[in-house]
Length: 170
Image 1 (cartoon, rainbow, N blue to C red):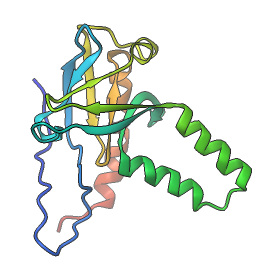
Image 2 (cartoon, rainbow, N blue to C red):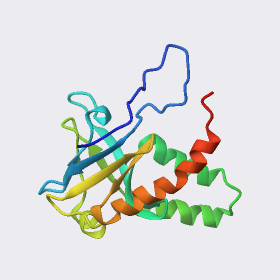
Image 3 (tube, one colour):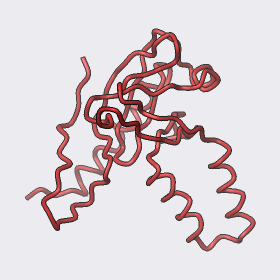
Image 4 (cartoon, one colour):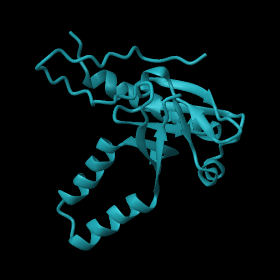
């Protein structure tokens, strides 16, 4: 059974609270269908008759291989981060080129499904009919294979003590 952190993205008028327009939150387990599609949680889906464009990027999160699904806003922020860095023009161009060459444009359709290209399915250890683990990360989410799921859970667990020490709710 999937579990998730409760989602609250409503913003009172005139108040900026630091949540992106499309906030991907929680951790979910789904299946990859025979065509390479994975459903996403209802909270992540676009409205009826709409689609949400994403960039599917071959990436590593916490040193674990993932397919990172980024909103247009998140992908643009990555490019702007490179542009705004102190790197030389040549290095900036190389890094942006890598981001563009390692991504594929996909969408969350109005039925809440993302089609993962067959090549990426195979390269990331995903199998039709098999499990797919989705980790919400705000403006993006990670698609994690069963082969790498344990490593992701372990990597996140290792960070919890630092998080607990750095956030004070009192």
